[in-house]
Amino acid sequence: MPVQHSASLAVPAAQPRGDQCPIDRTLGVVGSRPALLLLREAFYGARRFDDLARGVGVSDAVAAQRLKELVAAGVLEKEPYQEPGQRTRHEYVLTEAGHELLPVVLGLLAWGERHAAGARTSITASHADCGAPVEPVLMCAEGHRVAEDDVLVTAARRQPARQSAR
Image (spheres, rainbow, N blue to C red):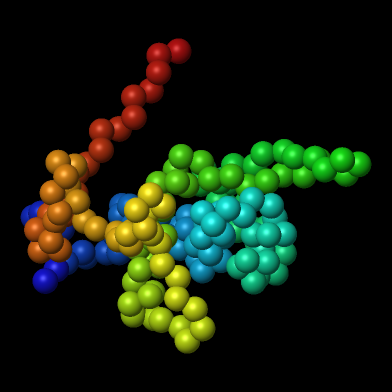
């Protein structure tokens, strides 16, 4: 059963919702396959360009462009490091906003294991302390598990940002 919609969303859109929709805006940041896989590698602990690009299996040019976009969006940040006798390079580190994408990445992992399982490997996420599987769930801020048909999606207009007095 689909999620519920408030009155403004229950009517089919006359035009594409575009950047009025946070999902659309998020996909603009992390919606490409290389971007999501670079995030996966960052969550797996890769920080250096070569490790990230190799883990995703894309060209250096594609990796560099996607990393640049993820840095510009505030999902990753660059931190300098230097090996003895080498020039300064940069590592890519998840920001707070980047860490907030972990449930999305784990949701994709869980969905892929159930619905797009490959023949070679099974990858699961588990709780380091007890070993139980980690499962993405819908939960309200009060801690209740929420079924899909109990989700109410509403659109609210944001107040325009105030301009500071000069």
